[in-house]
Length: 179
Image 1 (cartoon, rainbow, N blue to C red):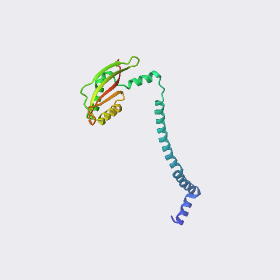
Image 2: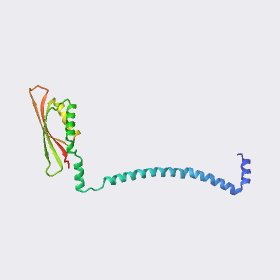
Image 3: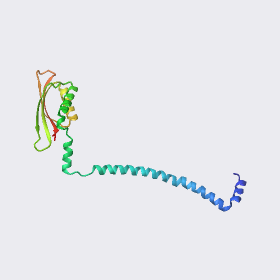
Image 4: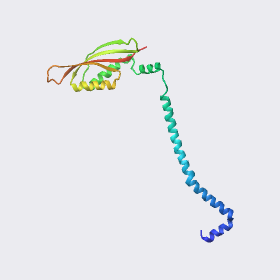
């Protein structure tokens, strides 16, 4: 608008109209500089609050106090059931096979735990292979089957320079008693 047009608009609106236009412009500027960014900050804070609330609920759930009996039950539930012994032995054979070892025969003896709720299955497994194969097999056994304990390993070599070892593993497989 030129100066002439603005004076004409001023005469038409009068000072109350000009004040209203000035207030509208000031209100828009105030909204753009204060209210809009405050709304964005509110949205960001609301997202943070939701995330913190979720974490608080998760922490409260994790921090629930269990009685010793509940802790003991949870411990025993971590063991595979006794009826799954064949599957566990199959996993042992699969791990040995993965390392190029064959389990052709073995001796098995089962003994229940007198005080707890576990069954001990003692196994004596003969293996034939290189030291690296047997060691790799033992490493994978303890990593993949945490309910297996290694009691003894016996190595025997037929000749001094022979790369093939005869090994006898004595393992204990811990299983949950079937009720």
